[in-house]
Structure formats: C-alpha cells, structure tokens
Length: 344
Image (tube, rainbow, N blue to C red; front, side, top):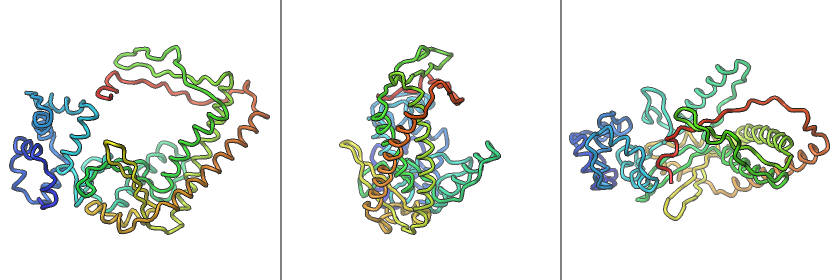
C-alpha cells in the first residue's frame, strides 16, 4: 500500500479489515487494488459486519444479515460509510471510485483512461439500441458521459463527483428549464389518480395524473414537442463541442453545507482521453478550463428554448384540436415495497 493510500485509512477501516481479511496488509499495492475493486462476497459480508460494529456499535452475528443491514443504513450513516471505505475500494492517487456498472469480469482497472471506459459503454449502448430497433442509425462516438456518479478524495476532503460531457451538462440545464417554462405557459400540477397506492403483490401502483385545468391534451403535446427539440439539441451539441477542439474540463463546485460535490464537465472525447483513472484529479487540473464558455453556451441554449416553447405554444393555441388524440404508449409504473427503505 502506498503512503498516500495508507494515510487515508481510518482506524475503523483498519480494524474491520483485520477481521475480514488480515493478510490484505501483506499484499502488494497492485494486489490490494485488484482486491478492492472486486471484493469477494464472503469478504464483503464480513467487512460489513465489522464496520457496522466499528461505526455504529451494532453487533450482527450473521455476516449475510450484516450485509443486508449495511445496504439499508440511513443517508447520514451512508455518507460516513462511503468516506470510510473509499481508500479500500477506490483506485489511484485520489482513491477514485466510479459508481457505475461494469460488465461481467470487468472492473475499472480494465480501462486506462476515462475515454476507454466511456467509449466502451457507448458502443455497448449503441449496439443495444440497434438490436432493439433494426431501423436505428448508429451514431458516431462523441463522448457520452451524462451525470455519472463517482467518489474521490480532493486533497484530504472526501468528495462526491458528477461526470458529464459539456453537451450533457447543457442538456440537463435545458431539461430543468423546460419544465419551468412550460409551467409558465400552461399552469399544472400532479394529483393522485384512482389507482395510486393500489397494492399488487409486493409492489404498489404509482398513479399520478396531471391537472392542467382542462388543457391536459395541449400540455402533453407541448411537452412532447419540447422533448423532441431538446433531444435534437443534445445531439447537435455533442457534435458541436467535439468540433470545437477545446480538450478541457470545467470543475464546478456544487457543494452543500454538509457535503463536498464537484461536477466535472468535459468538453469532448479528447478531454476524456487525457484523463487517467489512476491520476484523475491531477489530469483534470492539467486541462482545466474556465467555466465561462460553458455557462455562456448554456444561457444561449436556454434563450433558444424559451423562444421555441413560446412560439410552439402560440401555434398550438391556434391549431391544436384536443378531440384528435395521438396514440402514445402509456407506462404502468410499479414501486416495490422496499424501494424507499432507508431514505429519509
């Protein structure tokens, strides 16, 4: 274990690891890292058992039961838990941990750079879309990170991170702005439908209906047109930012009083290629760019969106016929009884 990683180990984690897998401390740094990104299930259960005792004084005799209990801890406990285990499960200088799924037999160590991971994931997603819809036209890779979650240490500070492409960051701003702009045009609220909360097996029905004072059909049409518009802008922005050749990343502090958060916003796929997981923060700092260009682009897109929604709403008021209903797929949403367990 390198000195920098060793210094980040809390006494609680050391003691828990001594109970779960004491020989860990005799391994090479490389073997420790490989273990941390793919901890065997039985070791994970024993580690949960030991950590629950260390962090909260809870004694659970069964390792399996301890693992289940650890998965249901409160958000406040979860924050401390994440900080405690990060030096074990994270990699590189910053103990970087990517909170995303990997395919079988793969871990973050299979990918040298952020681009290698993202491009592989994008290729998989494109193949899936093509298999589901043979008419789908595969799109070139332009970077696809969108609000991905990670954790790392920034200096000595445990920090949550969000990773996005510039196009995705702007699209998220458009999506948020669209809801407010549409509500200004057509005031509405969501009310409980007749089936809301209806129990079916271990799930309950989620049935919230929109109340727009009789303008529900008009609202739905405006929302649909806005959705198509923002999706088209997202696709165009991905191409535009890749053609700019900025090869940079904005580090945007979005911290809250009790939680450190940074949004890493990457300009293009070449910026992803310049960032290694083993030296994530150092590589980001090396290509860091001011946030001004990104913010200006976001504001310009929001102005265009406001114009689009205004003109479309005015046009729909003149031409929309609510008696002509479009056929759209309606989803039945079911929520498992344990879905919100542990959420305060």
